[in-house]
Image 1 (tube, rainbow, N blue to C red):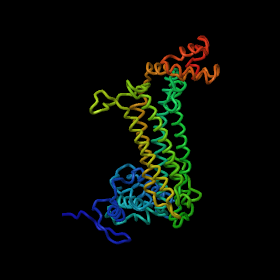
Image 2: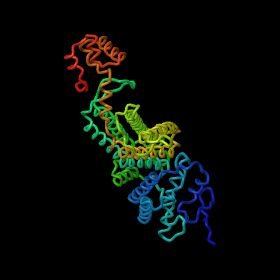
Image 3: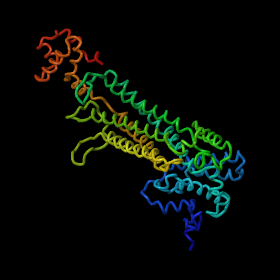
Image 4: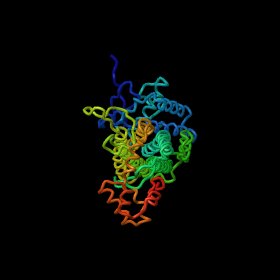
Length: 461
């Protein structure tokens, strides 16, 4: 019977590691010591660390501190990881050391063992690559992990969230055009107000999203500045001259994102204000989306006893006891996502303020919350757009009924007869269940011809 474990060692001594695992001693210790919850380090963050390892190998080779052979081993191993061939080799909990050291070593160990497999050497032999001396050369977890969060965050926002936001904005653009001539009653304090077009109402939603999109995009510029080359605390100890600019340039070329070396690495390593700002902008998008979702479910409430001005797609039965009931489920899902992200933002803000001296020890939480938020927002926006927004239709009959019954059309008379008389017309119409026109004639404040010319909902928009 073959042994299901192999014996490895690190600076603390020997430890058993599963025989076929590509991770090593430090990863195994983390698995044992941090059995906390079910949340794992996101694979996007693993891929970003892997990108750093590849670019570090290229840079170290260019600066003549790493051999061509070792550089090639590291690059080939990194290609295997980012191709998704070893995703199950990164099992560590988010709730680990606050620096992310064990995750950095997890990647180092897997790269080392992929090279061992490629050369026929035993797993855990650290031959031909040593996890620390070769794979982690010129680096520290303290500069690698925050840089990886910045890289993964930028990539996920640029490739996933912004394109999805753009499509949602385009969807509302189409609605604005389609609904531009539909006149409806506005509402303030949830009470009747003066009219606007349904297109104008939708333009507010579109503009909120566009502004949020621009805020998020602008926030990325701060996290394009990478702390790589700062190593342990920002001084660059054990990194060769020009390592920082060279590795940043290589990452920028590979990702096609304008990363650059941070001019002051102490600031970025001791605090993660740029990442806190990005998370804050994700929260702001959530605030906007939550407002829009609430508007849509208010305007669609009914179908008989509510506002009922919008008809949402009927996607699934809404009740286990009330036959025929349909609920605004996409609005509700979006509302829950947004509420969750607002909470995650609070955690990131607290984590960002929790750095002590030369290092912030909340890195895994910050990276996890940001990447989870990006994924939630992108997928929620797609679900909302495909299953709801694109299929929304106006209930023109109900819109017209609500408009005709509104008392606030009287506002247009104020410049002609004054606020007091206009108010008396509205109150009389409301108390006597009559129209504004009949009330105005009854009170004798204005003649029919002038009333019909002034109280024109279209001109009021």
